[in-house]
Amino acid sequence: MTKLIIERGSKGQMATSLPSCDVPAKPLGDLIPDTYQRSWESIRLPEVAEPELIRHYTNLSTKNHHVDKDFYPLGSCTMKYNPKINEWTAGQPIFAESHPLQPEALSQSQLQIHYELEQFLCGITGMKRFTLQPAAGSQGELTGVLIMRKYHEKRGNQKTKVLIPDAAHGTNPASVAMAGYEVCEIKSNARGLVDIEDLKSKLTPDVAGLMLTNPNTLGLFEENISQIVELIHSVDGLVYMDGANMNALIGIVRPADMGFDITHINLHKTFSTPHGGGGPGSGPIGVVDRLVPYLPKPTVDKNGETYSLKFDLPDSIGRLHGFYGNYGILVRAWTYIRMLGKDNLTDISKAAVINANYLMHRLKAYYHLPYDLPCMHEFVLSAVTQKAAGVKALDIAKRLLDYGFHAPTMYFPLIVKEALMIEPTESETRETLDRFVEVMIKIDEEIKQNPEMVHAAPLTTPVGRVDETLANRQLTVHW
Ligand SMILES: *Cc1c(COP(=O)(O)O)cnc(C)c1O
Image (tube, rainbow, N blue to C red; front, side, top):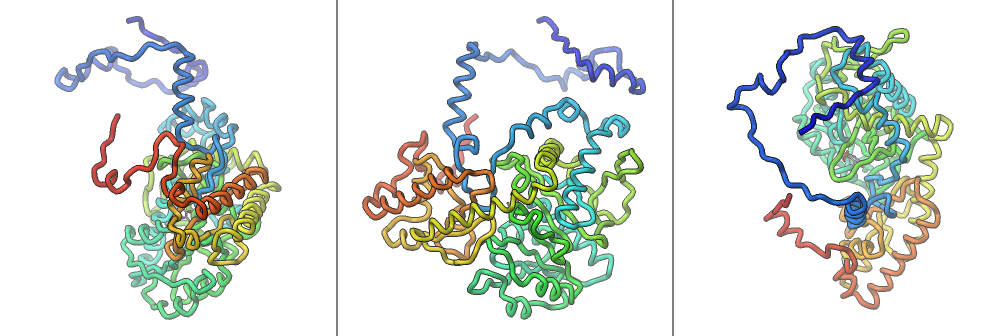
């Protein structure tokens, strides 16, 4: 076999300025004893022409639903479009081909992006500093609660539990439990907001803090934030804002100004980075001044025009990620923010909120709206009327697939029966929203006329209804 030699101009030039190191004269493979060498035989790959290959993958890609194909109203998970320019930036060799262990002197541009993104997030939230390490919103939450823990340990506080409203995102109680605290649930009132009386009754001196999803999972903005913050601070607790869906608030309100001590933002929701299928995500955590010493290390600092990694942080909770976070995702979020610019960032939230309210108003004539208040980036319908005709939220979601739309989030939040949680995002046009409304109205008609058909949906997708229980119990993974 001929050896393929790839020349990399920029790498080559870089290498000349690197200090020389001891590279063994023999090929590396020869240094590994035979017992540890893998034996192999050539694999038989099919020989196909380029058009066949392209057609294969293009056809495969259309068998599933994705945001480049059509509308994806997945409540709370913000499936907005992923601008192609994000991919271009992240694919630049300076980012795509750099190594996290290359010397700081050769990583100045990479560190600069890291530093600038942190500054942008501080500006957007009012927080003092951010860590960009957490690889998901949920990992950000864990980071935040670990910081909360460290704060109380340092002050000698005896704290055992964290308060979480029942309209919070499901990951909040999980993060609290993982960080070793007990979860104490706070009820929502009839308007879907935190029940202050219930909160007061559970506010004991051993409360470490409260995690508030804002806007909450009903898509509602908490009205009594100042009072909630004051109550929690009165027992030296910390207030955490789950800001995964910051796309509802950018340029309108800042978590720090509302009194929150810690917040996370999901870059893969608010700042248009790709996600789905479990990753790669990014859930940076921001904290107020007094919590900065506890942030994960290293931090990226700037002295004059030089960027450096700072490891000497004695009170840090430690590392949360192998290196510095999902770096390629950070570059994409940086691109989105830079592309819009300071003055246009607020348009994200204005459009997200207007789109959601528009859909909510058009659909509430056909589907029950349990909390009829102006919404933020999303709203929750209840298919209770349709259930009376024998068709569940699940069936409606499946029928939407036949019309080429992704299903909304279903059965969440738990406080709404037959929940359909819908989030249009800011990146959809009025025409797309109208098409979605027409289809939802049509499905409601179909339920009245032919509920059996809706019950059997999807009828046109490559895969019909799968037996999810069986799939969970007897999972067969084919390679
Ligand atoms: C998505 C979401 C999370 C969790 O984020 P992941 O990146 O999926 O771990 C937490 N809170 C809220 C409100 C969310 O919407």
